[in-house]
Image 1: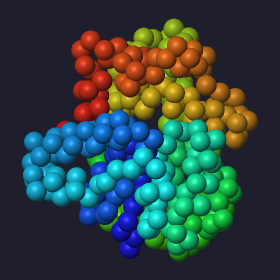
Image 2: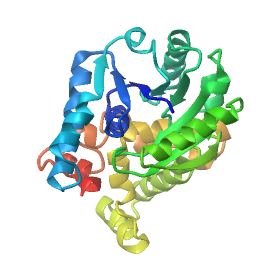
Image 3: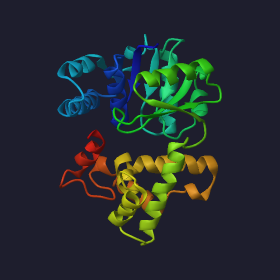
Length: 297
């Protein structure tokens, strides 16, 4: 079983993935473009571990051990030399991901598996810029990664059976429930979720009901733990827009076209929790922190 893990990106998903691997005893090298981003990621990991301790789910010794498994780097070439698995968790941007995968392919050992945490972009397309498409695979973790059990394991056209089986079994060692998914835009989770979020935005846009009313209907009427508009804020409205655009481009189907209100909000910088304002206002009451912690109960 692979033990040396490199995670590219110390943001919300990247630090969660690093946390999860480290807590299960893997050596993790966390890579980002700046020390500031890395320190912010480590601070988030430390805070999440402290919450687990407060709830009796982790000991101080386990926290120390987890943090001790993580080292940080600002250059991929300094981290990738002995990697068994590299997990890319950068922004959901195809050009950026292709650039990173070219670098990963050049720098990683030949036996290293290259995985992406993309939530919608074709694994086959990502693999096409590498010399090892059989070793490229999707590992789509859910947010917050340390808590959510699901991992979509996405096979590209050339992904080998051996690569799939190794990543599938590794996901189980992380305490996750891996689910096999084929390579189509949005995979399963976002192919179903994003049209629902987009329809909730359409409902608001058409004046059928207000933000809280729409979310209340879905929480109390459909037993969703979080309403679709609040969930969109939590995911990031820019991420929702990017995923919808990938699906719209991939399927050429109008049902995936992002609502104009979503487009305008992203253009205006109203991205949800991370910007302090989206469909809800998080700035004054620190609701953003509450939303981030809601799964950590």
